Every structure is written in structure tokens, then in C-alpha cells.
Image (spheres, rainbow, N blue to C red):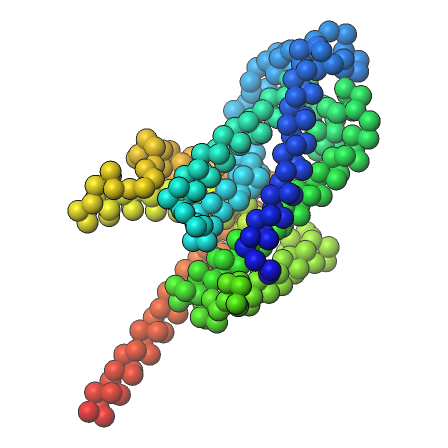
Length: 330
């Protein structure tokens, strides 16, 4: 509400806390893996025994697909790079830099922390009752591990809420500019902030929060299912947009060399992204616990299309009626 710069500053500090915690986790975990730091109940360095002794897929490869929706939900937010492009001073320089650093950090933080977890925690003991971060920190004797991670999780939630509110506000602003919702939601104040869109986004967030308490088994489940699958559909749309953009760009007489940022390994990369996202949508049918996400999402998307094309038809009819009236008057 204050400014984009203030949002960026707060997001930087919120993110810094969780980044420092993950780096600390990877460093201490790596030292424990090679035996520099002793682990409770283990006499020798575990190395990668827990990671490899029962094979890479102890529950079969199918388990990979049944966890993909949750994994995709955790990665949601990376598309914010595109959303912020419109408010970046030098997008041709800063956006490619942001894309490269984001990918680099995701590889280090996600794959690094998962490797440490898998190496230090036997997969039979890795559950959802206790944070794997707390489990590892407790096993190497770090004091107040639970309290530290609770603080980190709290800042991570604030970070996610902060960036989510920014994204939803700017998306409402964009929809208003495209004529899909009333133009009043695109109105900005003297600081360039679309306040009406921000208030509406905040109201939606509060209602979602209330539903987690009042109707957790019905409304909240539907919201989580739709949002988790919506992320994947958005990524599919991004990949398809990139494919169509390059075709249209070349058809208009331009060359690839004119592009400020070129998608690497085109068209293999966008098509791979599209197909893998599609598979993660389709294959949740085999998991009874996640199947409702598909059942809720399909009617929701269908309803969105009906509303969109219904409004377009009404708009065409109104224009046609107005033009007939004008011609009759003439």
C-alpha cells in the first residue's frame, strides 16, 4: 500500500531469514553427513546410505506423480518475475538476471536441502508430524531447534502472504486494463498503487483464512485444490504463450536476434514444461486424496470460460443494438 519499493524491501528481509536458515541447514547437514558433526544414535558418518540403500524410489515411481501437485504449489510464486516486469526500471537487463538467479537459488536451496534431508533421515521416519528441518537439527543437537524453525516458518508465511497479495493486486489491475473486469480496479493512487484492487485482494485473503476455521473440510479444501492446480495451469499457459509468441514474432518478419532475452533450447524447453505440467495434472487421478482437486478445478475453469465468453457476447449484442439505433436515427 505504501510503495513497490517498500514491498521489495520487506520481501527482501523476510526472504533473507528463510534463506539464511536453509543455508545453515545445508552446511550443518553436510558436516553431519560426512561425520564432522556427530548425530544422536549414529556411531559413524551416514554419508548417502539413507538416500540409496532402498533405491531411489522405495514406494515406486508412481509416488513421484502423486506428490507433484504439492511440490508445484510450493514452487508457486516464481511467475512473479513476469508480473513485476511492468514495474522494473530496466526489464531487458533485470528480468533475465532475476530469472537466472532464481533458477540458481532454487537448485541450491531446494535440491540441496532435500538431499541433506534424504541423507540424514531414513525415509520410513520422514513424516508430516514433525518438520524435517527440526528433525535434523535435533539429531545433531542444535538447541532450541523447534523454536528457531517456528520463527523461520512464521517469516516464510509473511513473505508468501506479502508476495501473494502483491501478485493478486497487480493481476486484478491487469485484468481491468484488459477489459475483463470493471476499469475502476485499474485506478491507481498518487504512489502508483491500485488501492481498490489491493483492498479486494485483502478481503479475499481474509475470507479464505476464515474458511480454514469455519468450513475447513469443504470450502477450504476446494480453495486449496483450485489454487494448487491453478498454479500448474498458469505455468502451462506461460509455456504455450512462449511457443505462440516466438511463432508470431517470426511470422511478423522479425528475427530471433532482435529479442532481448531468448528462451534457451527453444522449442524443447517450453514444450517439455507444458507436457510435464500436463502430466502432473492428469496423474493426480491415481491418488484418491488429491483427486478432488481435479473435480473442483475443471468446473471452476469451465465457469470462468462461460462467464468470459458470456460477457463478450453481451458486449457484442450491446454494440450491435447501439449501431442499429444510430443507423435508424440517421
